[in-house]
Length: 370
Image (cartoon, rainbow, N blue to C red; front, side):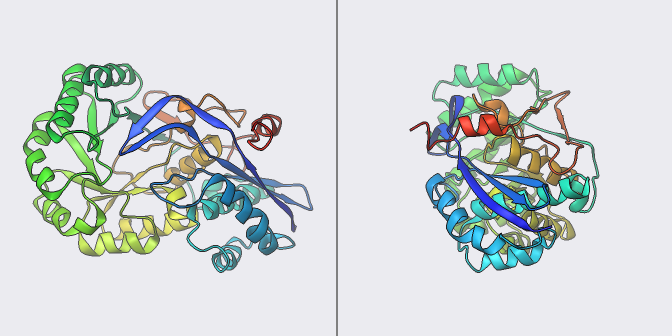
Protein backbone atom coordinates (compact mmCIF):
# COMPACT_ATOMS: atom_id res chain seq x y z
CA UNK A 1 0.00 0.00 0.00
CA UNK A 2 1.39 3.38 -1.04
CA UNK A 3 0.22 6.94 -0.47
CA UNK A 4 -1.32 8.20 -3.68
CA UNK A 5 -2.26 11.79 -2.78
CA UNK A 6 -2.37 14.31 0.07
CA UNK A 7 -5.00 17.04 0.07
CA UNK A 8 -5.82 19.95 2.39
CA UNK A 9 -9.29 21.50 2.52
CA UNK A 10 -9.80 24.79 4.42
CA UNK A 11 -13.14 24.71 6.21
CA UNK A 12 -15.50 27.65 6.75
CA UNK A 13 -16.63 26.95 10.31
CA UNK A 14 -18.25 29.16 12.94
CA UNK A 15 -19.31 28.85 16.55
CA UNK A 16 -22.89 28.95 17.77
CA UNK A 17 -21.93 31.82 20.07
CA UNK A 18 -18.83 33.91 20.72
CA UNK A 19 -16.35 32.09 22.94
CA UNK A 20 -14.19 34.36 25.13
CA UNK A 21 -11.03 33.40 26.99
CA UNK A 22 -7.71 35.09 27.68
CA UNK A 23 -7.59 38.04 25.30
CA UNK A 24 -9.37 36.12 22.54
CA UNK A 25 -12.92 36.32 21.20
CA UNK A 26 -13.57 33.40 18.84
CA UNK A 27 -16.60 33.51 16.56
CA UNK A 28 -15.14 31.37 13.76
CA UNK A 29 -12.42 28.75 13.45
CA UNK A 30 -9.88 28.37 10.60
CA UNK A 31 -9.86 24.56 10.50
CA UNK A 32 -8.16 22.53 7.76
CA UNK A 33 -8.94 18.89 6.98
CA UNK A 34 -6.08 16.81 5.60
CA UNK A 35 -6.97 13.78 3.46
CA UNK A 36 -4.41 11.08 2.65
CA UNK A 37 -5.43 8.59 -0.04
CA UNK A 38 -3.72 5.35 -1.02
CA UNK A 39 -3.43 3.30 -4.18
CA UNK A 40 -5.29 0.41 -2.53
CA UNK A 41 -8.31 2.37 -1.31
CA UNK A 42 -7.93 3.18 2.42
CA UNK A 43 -8.20 6.88 3.24
CA UNK A 44 -7.15 8.77 6.36
CA UNK A 45 -8.38 12.11 7.73
CA UNK A 46 -6.68 14.64 9.99
CA UNK A 47 -7.65 18.10 11.21
CA UNK A 48 -5.69 21.23 11.98
CA UNK A 49 -7.22 24.04 14.04
CA UNK A 50 -4.58 26.78 14.29
CA UNK A 51 -5.00 29.16 17.22
CA UNK A 52 -2.85 32.34 17.36
CA UNK A 53 -2.14 31.82 21.06
CA UNK A 54 -0.18 28.68 20.19
CA UNK A 55 1.11 29.02 16.63
CA UNK A 56 1.87 31.36 13.75
CA UNK A 57 0.26 28.89 11.36
CA UNK A 58 -2.88 30.03 9.57
CA UNK A 59 -5.50 28.26 7.51
CA UNK A 60 -3.80 29.47 4.34
CA UNK A 61 -0.29 28.53 5.44
CA UNK A 62 -1.37 25.03 6.47
CA UNK A 63 -2.90 24.39 3.05
CA UNK A 64 0.29 25.64 1.41
CA UNK A 65 2.50 23.53 3.66
CA UNK A 66 0.49 20.39 2.98
CA UNK A 67 0.55 20.94 -0.76
CA UNK A 68 4.14 22.20 -1.04
CA UNK A 69 6.04 20.30 1.66
CA UNK A 70 4.00 17.44 3.10
CA UNK A 71 2.76 15.87 -0.13
CA UNK A 72 6.25 15.58 -1.73
CA UNK A 73 7.50 13.72 1.36
CA UNK A 74 4.54 11.33 1.68
CA UNK A 75 3.45 10.45 -1.86
CA UNK A 76 4.74 7.04 -2.92
CA UNK A 77 5.59 6.00 0.67
CA UNK A 78 4.09 3.25 2.82
CA UNK A 79 1.77 4.86 5.43
CA UNK A 80 2.37 2.01 7.88
CA UNK A 81 5.89 3.35 8.43
CA UNK A 82 4.45 6.33 10.28
CA UNK A 83 7.37 7.22 12.55
CA UNK A 84 9.95 7.36 9.73
CA UNK A 85 7.49 9.49 7.76
CA UNK A 86 7.09 11.87 10.70
CA UNK A 87 10.86 12.07 11.07
CA UNK A 88 11.23 13.04 7.43
CA UNK A 89 8.38 15.55 7.74
CA UNK A 90 10.19 17.12 10.68
CA UNK A 91 13.03 18.00 8.33
CA UNK A 92 10.77 20.10 6.09
CA UNK A 93 8.19 21.36 8.60
CA UNK A 94 9.71 23.78 11.07
CA UNK A 95 7.55 25.10 13.91
CA UNK A 96 4.34 23.83 12.34
CA UNK A 97 2.74 21.74 15.11
CA UNK A 98 -0.86 22.02 13.91
CA UNK A 99 0.06 20.95 10.38
CA UNK A 100 2.08 18.03 11.75
CA UNK A 101 -0.75 17.04 14.07
CA UNK A 102 -3.21 16.84 11.19
CA UNK A 103 -0.85 14.66 9.15
CA UNK A 104 -0.03 12.40 12.11
CA UNK A 105 -3.75 11.94 12.79
CA UNK A 106 -4.51 11.20 9.13
CA UNK A 107 -1.77 8.55 9.00
CA UNK A 108 -3.10 6.86 12.13
CA UNK A 109 -6.64 6.98 10.80
CA UNK A 110 -5.54 5.55 7.45
CA UNK A 111 -3.55 2.66 8.94
CA UNK A 112 -6.32 1.88 11.43
CA UNK A 113 -8.87 1.69 8.62
CA UNK A 114 -6.52 -0.47 6.52
CA UNK A 115 -5.96 -2.91 9.39
CA UNK A 116 -9.53 -2.78 10.66
CA UNK A 117 -8.56 -1.59 14.17
CA UNK A 118 -9.29 1.58 16.16
CA UNK A 119 -6.57 4.20 16.49
CA UNK A 120 -6.31 3.55 20.22
CA UNK A 121 -5.09 0.04 19.35
CA UNK A 122 -2.25 1.59 17.34
CA UNK A 123 -1.43 3.74 20.38
CA UNK A 124 -1.07 0.64 22.56
CA UNK A 125 -4.63 -0.21 23.60
CA UNK A 126 -7.55 1.32 25.48
CA UNK A 127 -7.75 1.69 29.26
CA UNK A 128 -11.34 2.93 29.04
CA UNK A 129 -14.24 2.90 26.60
CA UNK A 130 -15.48 6.35 27.56
CA UNK A 131 -13.85 9.44 29.00
CA UNK A 132 -15.26 12.03 31.35
CA UNK A 133 -15.40 15.53 29.88
CA UNK A 134 -15.94 18.94 31.40
CA UNK A 135 -18.05 21.85 30.30
CA UNK A 136 -16.54 25.17 29.28
CA UNK A 137 -18.04 28.48 30.37
CA UNK A 138 -16.56 31.39 28.43
CA UNK A 139 -15.60 34.66 30.10
CA UNK A 140 -18.10 37.50 30.26
CA UNK A 141 -18.00 40.80 32.11
CA UNK A 142 -21.53 40.16 33.39
CA UNK A 143 -21.26 37.74 36.32
CA UNK A 144 -24.96 36.85 36.04
CA UNK A 145 -24.50 35.72 32.43
CA UNK A 146 -21.53 33.55 33.38
CA UNK A 147 -23.54 32.02 36.23
CA UNK A 148 -26.52 31.35 33.94
CA UNK A 149 -24.36 29.54 31.38
CA UNK A 150 -22.70 27.53 34.14
CA UNK A 151 -26.05 26.56 35.60
CA UNK A 152 -27.22 25.39 32.18
CA UNK A 153 -24.06 23.34 31.61
CA UNK A 154 -24.25 21.83 35.08
CA UNK A 155 -27.22 19.83 33.82
CA UNK A 156 -24.82 17.97 31.49
CA UNK A 157 -21.38 18.04 33.11
CA UNK A 158 -20.10 17.28 36.61
CA UNK A 159 -17.03 19.48 36.04
CA UNK A 160 -16.95 23.02 34.63
CA UNK A 161 -13.98 24.97 33.33
CA UNK A 162 -14.15 28.72 33.91
CA UNK A 163 -11.87 31.55 32.79
CA UNK A 164 -10.15 34.42 34.57
CA UNK A 165 -7.37 36.90 33.95
CA UNK A 166 -9.13 39.01 31.39
CA UNK A 167 -10.72 41.39 33.85
CA UNK A 168 -9.83 42.98 37.16
CA UNK A 169 -8.66 40.30 39.60
CA UNK A 170 -11.26 40.93 42.28
CA UNK A 171 -14.05 41.18 39.71
CA UNK A 172 -12.94 37.92 38.11
CA UNK A 173 -12.96 36.21 41.49
CA UNK A 174 -16.43 37.61 42.14
CA UNK A 175 -17.57 36.04 38.87
CA UNK A 176 -16.17 32.70 39.95
CA UNK A 177 -17.96 33.02 43.28
CA UNK A 178 -21.19 33.81 41.43
CA UNK A 179 -20.83 30.54 39.54
CA UNK A 180 -20.22 28.60 42.74
CA UNK A 181 -23.28 30.19 44.34
CA UNK A 182 -25.37 29.26 41.28
CA UNK A 183 -24.28 25.63 40.77
CA UNK A 184 -23.82 24.66 44.40
CA UNK A 185 -21.14 22.56 46.08
CA UNK A 186 -21.51 19.33 44.08
CA UNK A 187 -20.27 20.66 40.72
CA UNK A 188 -16.49 20.64 40.53
CA UNK A 189 -14.91 23.85 39.22
CA UNK A 190 -11.52 24.82 37.89
CA UNK A 191 -10.27 27.95 36.17
CA UNK A 192 -8.00 28.64 33.21
CA UNK A 193 -6.07 31.88 33.61
CA UNK A 194 -4.18 31.61 30.29
CA UNK A 195 -0.93 33.01 31.84
CA UNK A 196 -2.60 36.34 32.63
CA UNK A 197 -1.97 36.61 36.36
CA UNK A 198 1.19 38.04 37.90
CA UNK A 199 2.81 36.34 40.91
CA UNK A 200 1.25 38.99 43.18
CA UNK A 201 -2.17 38.32 41.62
CA UNK A 202 -1.72 34.65 42.41
CA UNK A 203 -0.82 35.37 46.03
CA UNK A 204 -3.86 37.62 46.40
CA UNK A 205 -6.16 35.11 44.72
CA UNK A 206 -5.25 32.00 46.71
CA UNK A 207 -7.50 32.66 49.76
CA UNK A 208 -10.49 33.21 47.47
CA UNK A 209 -9.56 30.17 45.39
CA UNK A 210 -9.95 28.08 48.54
CA UNK A 211 -13.19 29.81 49.56
CA UNK A 212 -14.75 29.29 46.12
CA UNK A 213 -13.63 25.67 46.10
CA UNK A 214 -11.61 25.59 42.88
CA UNK A 215 -9.91 22.25 42.33
CA UNK A 216 -7.26 23.41 39.85
CA UNK A 217 -5.69 26.52 38.35
CA UNK A 218 -4.67 26.08 34.72
CA UNK A 219 -1.55 28.04 33.71
CA UNK A 220 -2.07 30.96 36.13
CA UNK A 221 1.38 32.44 35.38
CA UNK A 222 3.49 32.82 32.23
CA UNK A 223 6.06 30.05 31.67
CA UNK A 224 8.81 32.55 32.56
CA UNK A 225 7.39 32.70 36.10
CA UNK A 226 7.68 28.96 36.62
CA UNK A 227 9.66 29.44 39.83
CA UNK A 228 6.64 31.01 41.53
CA UNK A 229 4.42 28.15 40.40
CA UNK A 230 6.99 25.69 41.71
CA UNK A 231 6.65 27.23 45.17
CA UNK A 232 2.88 26.87 44.97
CA UNK A 233 3.15 23.25 43.80
CA UNK A 234 5.45 22.55 46.73
CA UNK A 235 2.83 23.77 49.18
CA UNK A 236 0.13 21.53 47.59
CA UNK A 237 -2.52 24.18 48.24
CA UNK A 238 -4.20 23.64 44.86
CA UNK A 239 -3.45 21.64 41.73
CA UNK A 240 -1.65 23.57 39.00
CA UNK A 241 -1.95 22.55 35.34
CA UNK A 242 0.65 23.47 32.74
CA UNK A 243 -0.88 24.31 29.36
CA UNK A 244 0.81 27.15 27.47
CA UNK A 245 4.07 26.00 29.08
CA UNK A 246 3.89 22.65 27.25
CA UNK A 247 4.11 23.07 23.49
CA UNK A 248 6.74 20.39 22.84
CA UNK A 249 7.77 17.07 24.35
CA UNK A 250 10.87 18.82 25.71
CA UNK A 251 8.59 21.32 27.48
CA UNK A 252 6.84 18.45 29.27
CA UNK A 253 10.23 17.24 30.46
CA UNK A 254 11.07 20.74 31.69
CA UNK A 255 7.81 21.04 33.66
CA UNK A 256 8.44 17.67 35.28
CA UNK A 257 12.08 18.45 36.07
CA UNK A 258 11.32 21.89 37.52
CA UNK A 259 8.23 20.77 39.42
CA UNK A 260 6.20 23.73 38.16
CA UNK A 261 2.89 21.85 37.81
CA UNK A 262 1.04 18.89 39.26
CA UNK A 263 -0.87 18.28 36.02
CA UNK A 264 -0.07 18.64 32.32
CA UNK A 265 -2.85 19.61 29.92
CA UNK A 266 -2.12 17.32 27.00
CA UNK A 267 -3.37 18.70 23.68
CA UNK A 268 -2.32 16.76 20.60
CA UNK A 269 -2.85 19.74 18.28
CA UNK A 270 -0.52 22.16 20.07
CA UNK A 271 2.09 19.44 20.68
CA UNK A 272 2.36 18.46 17.01
CA UNK A 273 0.21 15.35 16.97
CA UNK A 274 -0.78 12.26 18.94
CA UNK A 275 2.67 10.71 18.61
CA UNK A 276 4.30 13.66 20.40
CA UNK A 277 1.42 13.87 22.88
CA UNK A 278 1.86 10.22 23.84
CA UNK A 279 5.59 10.79 24.37
CA UNK A 280 4.84 13.77 26.63
CA UNK A 281 2.27 11.69 28.50
CA UNK A 282 4.79 8.94 29.15
CA UNK A 283 7.25 11.47 30.61
CA UNK A 284 4.56 12.88 32.91
CA UNK A 285 3.21 9.50 33.97
CA UNK A 286 6.66 8.13 34.76
CA UNK A 287 7.29 11.12 37.02
CA UNK A 288 3.98 11.08 38.86
CA UNK A 289 2.61 14.21 37.19
CA UNK A 290 -1.10 14.01 36.39
CA UNK A 291 -2.65 14.34 32.96
CA UNK A 292 -5.74 15.81 31.41
CA UNK A 293 -6.47 15.76 27.68
CA UNK A 294 -7.14 19.20 26.27
CA UNK A 295 -8.08 20.64 22.92
CA UNK A 296 -8.36 23.91 21.04
CA UNK A 297 -12.08 23.39 20.36
CA UNK A 298 -11.76 21.39 17.15
CA UNK A 299 -14.35 19.78 14.91
CA UNK A 300 -15.10 16.06 14.85
CA UNK A 301 -11.91 14.65 13.35
CA UNK A 302 -9.42 16.12 15.84
CA UNK A 303 -11.89 15.55 18.68
CA UNK A 304 -12.09 11.86 17.77
CA UNK A 305 -8.29 11.76 17.89
CA UNK A 306 -8.39 13.29 21.36
CA UNK A 307 -10.84 10.61 22.51
CA UNK A 308 -8.53 7.86 21.28
CA UNK A 309 -5.57 9.52 23.01
CA UNK A 310 -7.53 9.78 26.26
CA UNK A 311 -8.47 6.09 25.98
CA UNK A 312 -4.80 5.09 25.60
CA UNK A 313 -3.61 6.82 28.80
CA UNK A 314 -3.42 4.70 31.97
CA UNK A 315 -4.71 7.41 34.27
CA UNK A 316 -6.39 10.79 33.86
CA UNK A 317 -6.23 13.20 36.77
CA UNK A 318 -9.02 15.45 35.50
CA UNK A 319 -11.80 15.29 32.89
CA UNK A 320 -10.96 15.94 29.26
CA UNK A 321 -11.83 18.95 27.09
CA UNK A 322 -13.20 17.02 24.10
CA UNK A 323 -16.63 18.43 23.38
CA UNK A 324 -15.55 20.99 20.75
CA UNK A 325 -17.96 19.91 17.99
CA UNK A 326 -20.90 20.82 20.24
CA UNK A 327 -19.87 24.49 19.95
CA UNK A 328 -19.99 24.59 16.11
CA UNK A 329 -22.79 25.44 13.72
CA UNK A 330 -21.28 23.12 11.10
CA UNK A 331 -20.24 19.46 11.31
CA UNK A 332 -17.97 17.42 9.03
CA UNK A 333 -18.60 13.93 10.42
CA UNK A 334 -21.72 11.80 10.14
CA UNK A 335 -21.49 10.79 13.81
CA UNK A 336 -21.63 13.44 16.51
CA UNK A 337 -20.18 13.41 20.00
CA UNK A 338 -22.79 12.90 22.70
CA UNK A 339 -22.32 13.63 26.38
CA UNK A 340 -23.99 10.98 28.55
CA UNK A 341 -23.62 11.19 32.32
CA UNK A 342 -20.74 13.61 31.82
CA UNK A 343 -18.85 11.18 29.56
CA UNK A 344 -18.26 10.70 25.82
CA UNK A 345 -17.81 7.22 24.37
CA UNK A 346 -14.56 6.44 22.58
CA UNK A 347 -15.31 5.55 18.92
CA UNK A 348 -15.03 1.81 18.32
CA UNK A 349 -14.81 1.56 14.52
CA UNK A 350 -11.65 1.22 12.43
CA UNK A 351 -9.33 4.22 12.43
CA UNK A 352 -10.82 7.20 14.20
CA UNK A 353 -14.20 5.48 14.11
CA UNK A 354 -15.90 8.57 12.66
CA UNK A 355 -17.08 8.84 9.06
CA UNK A 356 -16.19 12.12 7.38
CA UNK A 357 -18.99 13.54 5.24
CA UNK A 358 -16.94 14.50 2.18
CA UNK A 359 -19.87 16.09 0.40
CA UNK A 360 -20.42 18.42 3.36
CA UNK A 361 -16.67 18.98 3.58
CA UNK A 362 -16.60 20.11 -0.04
CA UNK A 363 -19.60 22.36 0.56
CA UNK A 364 -17.77 24.01 3.48
CA UNK A 365 -14.57 24.55 1.49
CA UNK A 366 -13.60 28.13 2.38
CA UNK A 367 -12.10 28.68 -1.07
CA UNK A 368 -15.51 28.34 -2.72
CA UNK A 369 -17.43 30.33 -0.09
CA UNK A 370 -15.34 33.50 -0.19
